[in-house]
Length: 354
Ligand code: F6P
Ligand code: MN
Image 1 (tube, rainbow, N blue to C red):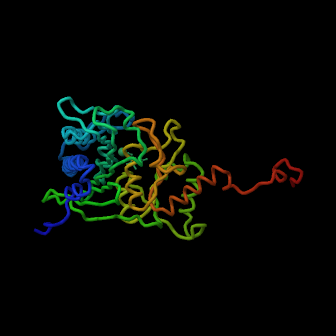
Image 2 (cartoon, helix red, strand yellow):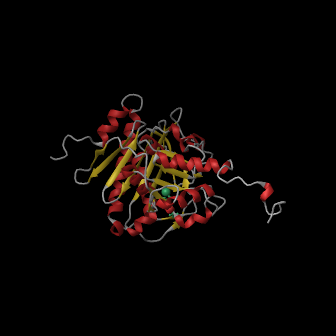
Image 3 (cartoon, rainbow, N blue to C red):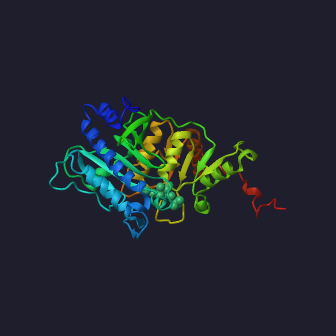
């Protein structure tokens, strides 16, 4: 009886989508059902039969695990039938998924990364599902171009984190709210209403093995954090790297911090690691709705107009003061104002060379 009377995810969604977007409310309840299926599978570990085992290479040129494939199937099957959707797009599918003939069509578009950070499932570390809902102008069959909308047009965005507990964190454009799965009761219960990211932080997250490939403004920022008290920051910083974006963003929503997957020169064909439509944009909306910021260093992530379904972007997100500082460092680098003034008269071949 202890949970009776608490706000369930279904109640929250129905109350907050009544009227214009009630169909989207029904869709979100199916997304939550898919998340419960994935949570149950991931929670069984190797006993599910899907964790570990052989891998194939997916459309992104990355390893696709059996658990990625089955999680993708779970979302497609749970969400295709309801009549709310014009199409779906997934990290695991090269092209958008058309709604099968036998089902009615709606005007919403669902995009998702079914199992983000899935290499972590082999080592029993948190993984997650990221999703976003966009709208098409009319019900029908969505084309790729329908999905290519800037993130500020998202109607809803969220993620599920499969950790020691399973949580679903959601925004419908009015704050960011966290729900915890009560496994026995089978309900997501509102446990973290109106999450706020602290504006200041002393914790950063980045894959530091890429340091030599970063641009100078990111190198400057990270070296100042590492120098801590002894340098311009005047305070020591802590570092974290889980290699699971969902877990990283969740930590930032809970206690602040900054997450960086910046542009690097490791693979010149890739202007970043993370995908705009189903990783960066939904996380950016959740972080902004919680009072944080999300930027490439040069542009607000939610303002980027996508030109491809699987487009990658640099991502710097989290506590406002730190993202602002990083944007300033990019600006100073781009305008040359981060370099001390050097008079040509004192250069190597100058008249005054000693
Ligand atoms: O999907 C991309 C992702 O797995 C993120 O979840 C994570 O933040 C990142 O890649 C990890 O990257 P790396 O392998 O460079 O640590
Ligand atoms: Mn991913």
